[in-house]
Image (cartoon, rainbow, N blue to C red; front, side, top):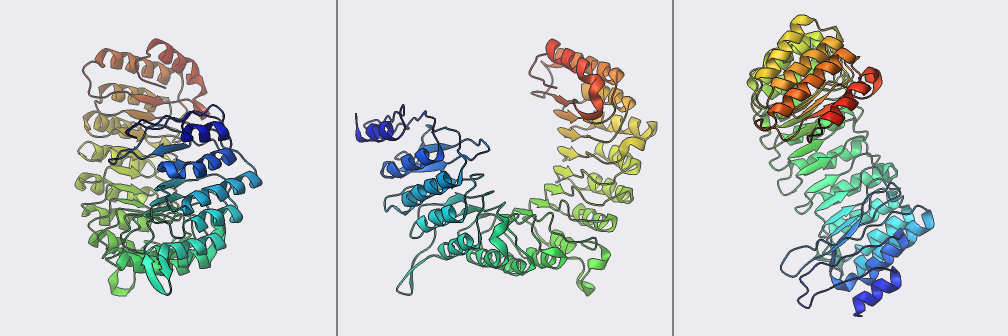
Length: 505
């Protein structure tokens, strides 16, 4: 038995580590243990070039340890075991992981520890291990219980390593995920953002860390600085407010690197994006950012209390935008008055692929506008309209909606949950799904569908089963069960039992 096998047999009974003479085959692990044992194994194997480590938490996330092969590849072996709760075990396991990170021969480049209930002591163990470590490039400590002390120490690590007042080397971190740690607080969040505004960090997730408007200023400076390498920035569910977000969007006009920006649920108030939010003759920050920025691909403004006035301004700015592919306005206060602007957007914009308007106040006017514009739209692939107020739409809207979906050749996902559409919509949408060649998912939860609609959907599935050899779709997912669709349970079970052709209900 070689030394690696002896280590594995001692720490985790049943673990077998196989290594070829050329060291090109992956190590294979199959074991069950707790966080303490996995951490000890991680520390013991630090000299065997362990490359990726993911430690599961009490919620049952998968974990794995992979080994980097000579020549740049990564092994396929993994250690999979359930996580363990308990403060003492978590902190003791964090101590061993910190030792592995601090080892001079450590080769870890990825460490994922989300949902592990890591407290302040355990977080300090892990972060202290990063002092002097230049190999770790990805660190995920999301949804733990990290405090201000952990964040301040991590900010010092992100600035680089100094000796005798001179900088020795830079931190290797390129991706940092700290979302779901609200105890980090105001001061630590501000210092953390300043230290991470450098030419190395590309992916930054700081959602729900207790940051307030003071952290928006260093964020704005980072967005203006051409040397900062941020490409993914998630600062949702904080307390930036309207003034803080406006600072970021004014800075976004000049940014040439950021691809994804998520700033939803930041307590902005109803004036955000509205005409009252304009800054003298300069205009509205979000509108100006969408007009000037040429690299942003995804924007999330969900749960931002945007009213109809703000929604009209946003959609108007998107008409001439040629880069944004994903837009989320979920959970705002937008109503039927945006119908005309929504129609113009879908008719004129040929770039937008994902549009999320769920949980707003859209009514029959928006339903008719969507019906008139989807017929000619050639870019939209995912449309989320769940929990609006389309139930009052009449037969004319239903006919136009059905016709436009039959003629549309790009839409793949359509979500209409919670709109109280009724049985007539179920029957017509079944006919539409049978004739459409691109739709792969149709969700109709909580829509008061009855058995008549279920039978129509069953006939649609029969038609699809006959056409399955010529249609371009790989599968069709129909989501019906739940809420007010209880009479459909019998019909759905018939569909599943009779047509098990890769399609699911």
